[in-house]
Image (cartoon, rainbow, N blue to C red):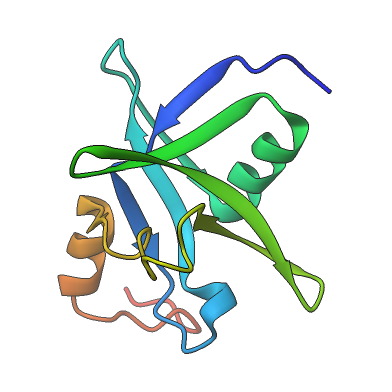
Length: 115
């Protein structure tokens, strides 16, 4: 296993707006200690956790809660360590600004190009 290099605080999520609980999170994002921003898809964050190079956590009040990888019927997803007692810890984070702006913009059909 690789050496843990980054402990990342998650400050926002991009939600997939799916009814499927395993597809609710599209990506997670935050800011490093040097004020640079980072963003990973859920799959990329899972790969980094499993490789042991990154650890992700959220801050909820006075608590710091680690994110873990959970598998259900062969599908992997992220959740907080205390999910059983505090459901949807991760989903209660702020929706990232890019997602909020995209959802406020009018829908543009992707199957046809407009000129």
